[in-house]
Length: 94
Image 1 (cartoon, rainbow, N blue to C red):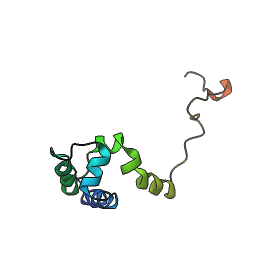
Image 2: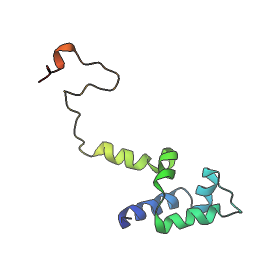
Image 3: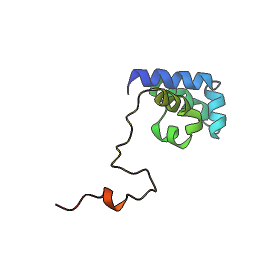
């Protein structure tokens, strides 16, 4: 795994109060390995499945960072989700 990502994950865990607090917020059993599991993430990185399951804890800063970065705008030919293209926008079959 990318060491930069692991460093960011380590900082996130520390910012949230450390392994014990993160384990408690995730509902892990604190007496049966929950704290050790989260502590291991400081070395190995937070698993992607955990980040996706708890975006309010682990992805917020990255979403803010992405919003600040220059992001390519969707193509005008692709309508936003839920919008139907106008009949004139659909190219004729070749």
